[in-house]
Length: 276
Image (cartoon, rainbow, N blue to C red; front, side, top):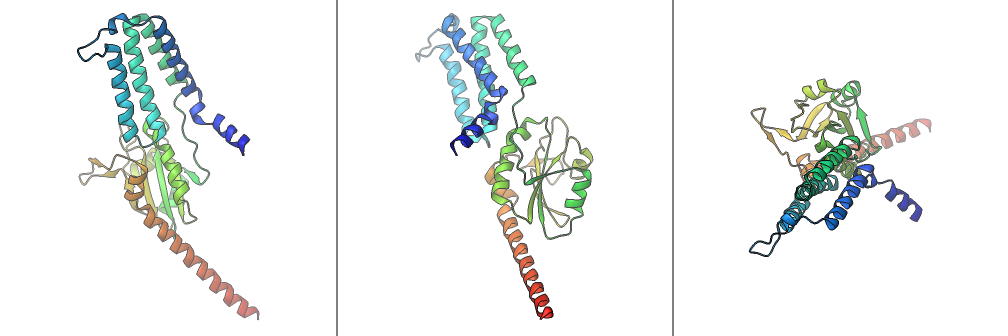
């Protein structure tokens, strides 16, 4: 077990170049700060705080705020790194504008070349295209429920919320409650049919839609009555479970499975009688 845990730790997405390089840059800033503290930020206000400590306090306050509102660890770490970078650049500007410019370039380079890694999609989640979406979802008349996660790889919101999908699949996976993903940026026609915008400014990604026997049962975020206003944009594990009615969907799936087993048992009993 121990080697497995160690291998899982070192293969974790949180040890990817994105996080490691950001950590190295933050460590380099600390060394520069110790060697050449910014004299202009050492001024003490009437409350006894320096300007530099105020910058760090604001960043720390944002850390706490995001810790209370971030739906996943990925979203939280993304916010923490953003606030940390801003604080570092501000402090470096007072130390050396040239050094601040170098760090801006390095942070930008890391973000472009080594983007924040995504959570691995569970094996239970099917990847759909236009054809398989029609076959398994819209034309599927069997007693099954399919939850489709429409996403776009370029969307930081989709990347940050991906771990929610993993948690939901682990909790609600069932032979008659199936999970699937569809890249809305590739299959734009499918997204358009579902009234999901794939524009760069879209707030509809990711969109999670529940289907059963070819009909849509629920979705988040939901479209407003006027067709434009969006509601239910805040996605958390609890809001998805409640908004999509997953507890009830699971009970229905279990009832269907029990019904199928009973029918199979009766058919087998009839066949056994015939053979006698």
